[in-house]
Image (cartoon, rainbow, N blue to C red; front, side, top):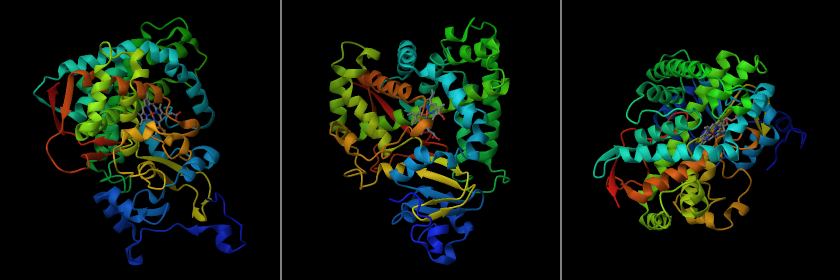
Length: 462
Ligand code: HEM
């Protein structure tokens, strides 16, 4: 696949690039209103039909304008790694996270990443393990055998419990702290498909929810920082969680410019959102997949039953089946189903022109189900990861955590949490799915894919 075709054959098209294909409908249907309405109705279906014969297409939306969908590992590698200076984080990140790690660029990003990286080191993860396991057990004990639980809400609560018990250094009330939980949920709404395609001045209900949630989450973050500031560690190297690290850096004066009060708050908002919602989705869909595949469930149960006692961090190496269940779940249902970027200049990708300032979306979920890379791509088959698949896969064909320098900082944290959560719950309970015959789990799209709120599963004692 060519990266830059400009000038290769001397024709005007090759120099300037061709216009990217539009969805394959009659040309009279290439109007932004038509695309917007279809995207609002069924964003995946519309995009899938459009990409049936193309790895790169353009959808015309009333709000963001032409959005370029890129669906090949080579494109991902170019955007996330080799040509990343021409694809910056999109405005959407800045709207949601302002000066937080996930949104900033350049030297500010490099410095922030350097400062925050120690919180995700191997040693730090080991220190979090007990808090993580305790929080998971408290949540599991909250589930009564024989009752139904709302899987989306409970996994979201579980991952917030874990995040607070570890990175934020404070236990949440299992059945309370609703203000934090609701606010953390609402950043999602910026990307609601019923609202995202519209111009930003349209005050949709989703956008109003987003704005309220963001304000609340910012005030929660400021309060958490104020509480931590009352007893700051003497030196940043003594900090053992995010809040104490941030206040110690501020007190030390070293980072005064990079870490203004607003920036500190933005880091906390970023970690609360990025650190819980994605992992909740991975865990919820893994339970869905286990419920739907009794033969995999049997192997999973055999593995967790063979542990000496309740799972701990030292058991992770023995949890091969569990690990493959998580890996395969995130292939089929990647929580971050699309990675957005914005071009900093005109670029030509495979002969197609993408103008400066255009929104580009890397379609992670499409590549994860592409038959060119995965056999029987729609099937849930965790055992495929027990083969040499990883070595055979092209680079960037499995990217649930992104790739290149901006890859997820919380990857190991999330994998450890997901495995411990599945194993801890799986030793005692099976979460039984309602008897419907659809193969597609109920999903809701926002900034991430999520299990549809209100999806009830039955807690069955094993
Ligand atoms: C299954 C769980 C998770 C998934 C699927 C996931 C996915 C991702 C992806 C795809 C990116 C790259 C975004 C981009 O390139 O634009 C990312 C970045 C990030 N993630 Fe995660 N994530 C998960 C868990 C976590 C956790 C647990 C944390 C923190 C506790 C976290 C914090 C972050 C942050 C701060 C970034 C921005 C990194 C940077 O730009 O340097 N994530 N994540």
